[in-house]
Image (cartoon, helix red, strand yellow):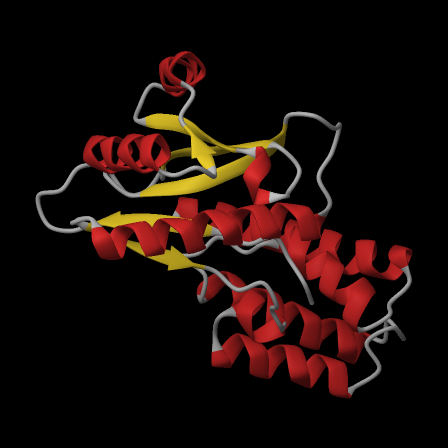
Amino acid sequence: MKTLLECEFLPDHDFSASKIKDFFVKFADLHENWSFPIDESADYEKTSGSTAFYVLNNQSTNLPLAAVAIGKKEDKKENLKVWNIVPRTKSQLTQEEYNSILKRLLSDLIYFKRRNRSHFKIKKGKEEIGIEDILRSKGTLWHWNRFLKGYPLSFHPNDIEHLDCFIVAWKSNSRKNEPNLDLFRRYLIEELNWKKEHAEWCVNRIDIGFHVLQAKRNMS
């Protein structure tokens, strides 16, 4: 299943997010494909309350003109991530256009990093993902496969019990990574060919289960 690319910039020891920003300023100043909008970046940083900036692709990339929004990750003090890519000359980017712009940025940036000393790593996500990437746990995946091996759309009590066991497993194994129910919904519809109403029922039950489990945890 194709999805939007994600990307993080991870600083080495004693290297800050603001220094990564300085590197992007240098990169955009010297590379013909990119530019750094100083005023817009200043406004973005002021609004976000932490290191944040835009990088703009130029006509030479032969891609839709857009602004790549980069800012601090919420759970990591100095890590940066690509939060969004905003079109500048059209109302909306397709998934393919979004990913192409980000891949071009990373390709140009990696080439530039090889010739200019830097102190941060680039962590790129996957463009094609499967259910194992969404669930991120072998135990959770086992419970999901057990549910699928039955009659998942029969709504039989035994199948619903298997679904509930899967819900508990997913929540228990996702303390570091919040479950992505939007991706899971897409997987049900696009990969399993479930009808939208069946996918919505399943996702809604999972969501309610997560809230109940969280309430139980808060009472402990």
